[in-house]
Length: 408
Image 1 (spheres, one colour):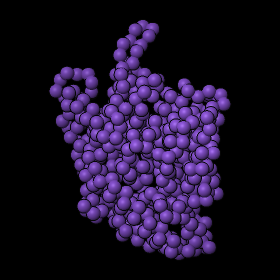
Image 2: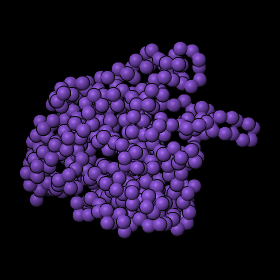
Image 3: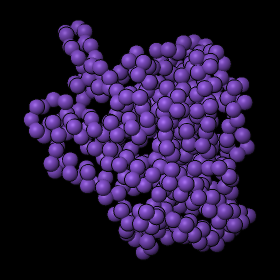
């Protein structure tokens, strides 16, 4: 199935914006949803809607089967060792905060180190700032190369025997850098540190094997991988999750409650207090089915090809600056058009029916490293084509003509 055929499976893409066919180039922010995912959620609400793990009636049993079936799909999708290692969350942000608050605060003490990079999304930066403030641990940053990539020698030089946590994004949402997380995890483990991976931008696009990566925790979101918003998953090695404290308390996650003491259920349910995100899990399971029907390797190949084509075409525009590596990169291109503010660029493109992202992309430290306040970003997914890139380039040329005085 080619990208044009795949595009037909996404209802939202069959519309005009400001009199032009929609070109959606903002999948790094959130992906669109295929009919199969929409129908799966609709079917759940029309036929199976009930709470899970509680009632013995038919609807409750069907809802529980659907919810736990989705967990099995997630475990298989990222090759977890068992379903007990998969915790459903609201998304990547929640998963990373769970690790920071439930694990890192308990193991870090004054003088310990938490190693991250300047390219991290705020969701994988602020939680570690808070851990450092609460425990006296020190934040250390792996330096970036000129193109935004990192060298393993710099990783070796930054991680020490005082390092307790190494937390790194697999794929940068700004630079398109694909970080060598497997090699970094090996270095972290040699020093006794735990490896936390932000998988928000990798899971929708690459074949992920958490056992091969040997990461200790891995968090991702459903809405970036053709699933619904408000659902994600945290993977953690079983021994770590068993010794980690929940950060949310209430119904469903308890084993026994007394007047003054309570005990928790076994994994994974001790981390899923209250009524869970049932319909979201059903939708995530359907999204996994959809992505696997296309093939993650094929999605990765298609996006890298589009990104390379986009870099080639955008490089033809005089005065346009592209950020990140020119060669091996994930399926996105971040750029600025002279001194034109990215919001103005995005506004003009929207008038042409083209949706891109403009701003700091929740990466303000990285923007300062790039010496800009914000950038524009075009991000691609399995439903995009070279025609979309051509539309983008043509509209940027119009934008350049309109703002000619601001472009050198």
